[in-house]
Length: 239
Image (cartoon, rainbow, N blue to C red; front, side, top):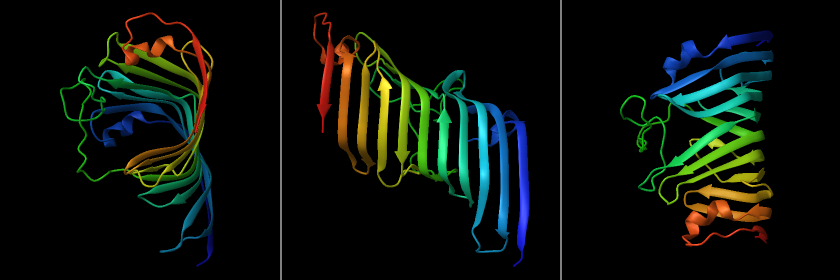
């Protein structure tokens, strides 16, 4: 077949009108932009490689009235046309803000599960077929921030990791093989922590090197259940 040259440009396309296509009670907002081109034959069984980028700016995801995640920009490059999965060689997430929570029973609060409107769910329908799939060659995270709230311990733990930078390889949904992870962040109170290694999910295994330098111990004492106030900083390098 003859070569076709196609161009696609998008600018500030709002995501809110299409949010009804997102399963569960998720509310999605943001603005999409794209600059894509195809310079190869278009025919059945011929892979179609999209050059350029597809991005979402000011992305926000909420479950009812509770914000789950936000990002300044998410950008995918070198996309292979296929659905599902949607493969891309590289995705960059700039300025992500994510909140993770554990309830009084020690269960991780899972968003989008059935429940009352505006209330986050606690169980996902693991038997349902995924409505969305993707596979990434490389995932880059820049200037991230993760908030962790744990109500299963006393006093309640509220931690925030700042300046998160990470490179993840092998990322896919549904989860498949192990992830290669290289990450570093600033824990509460300053200092630094990092991890370089691999994480698998079936079964869950972690292999790699974890390190910390000048990290405060105070924010984590609730997990140690030590009835005393302990101040100090810790350095370690474990493999």
